[in-house]
Image 1: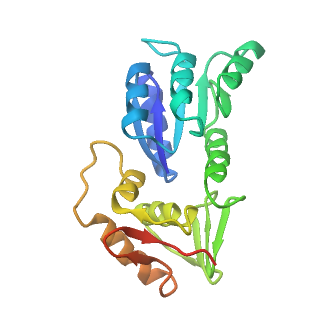
Image 2: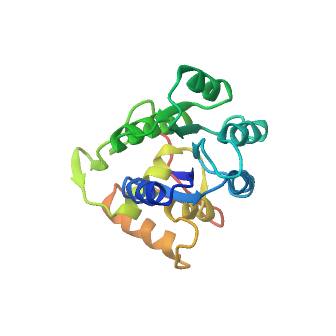
Image 3: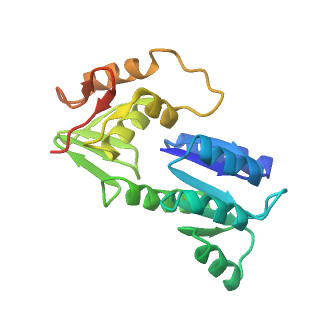
Length: 219
């Protein structure tokens, strides 16, 4: 899952990026509203995590601008503004959720999982397809009820495919979910991760669509 984090507090942003990446998210970050609008236009994320107190413009103006072209993009607001009027303004402006600073990281992760489920194919934290189960809350992968050890990248890749079961995912789209801006990506990185996953899952669970990408069929 590809997140765009818009936060100008460097210390907070660094901490959030580290925690979110360890939880299986690919996170890109900008620190001002203009860069946020540009990033959404050029590399639209799966979820936008938007601080309202930005140095160049109000976060609500960023939200309204983004909403005009991307009405379906899930947006979670982060802000120190905690009055009822502020919350109403954020939600009426098009936000899907609103989290007041300071907040606990587990609460942020739980709210992001709710947004994930809205745009994925699963209604709970557990995604079941055939003999494979992936739990986004505990990061466990089960094959025929037995736990399977997967690396962080393998988990992120399997999650992206299972959340989009029945839809073909290109190598480029998968790379955007596994790697953040500036990270070095080997030319065959996705192929290597796919190869390793196939050895751990049931036969033919991941299908190659030649010249296009990969998919997991719904069952």
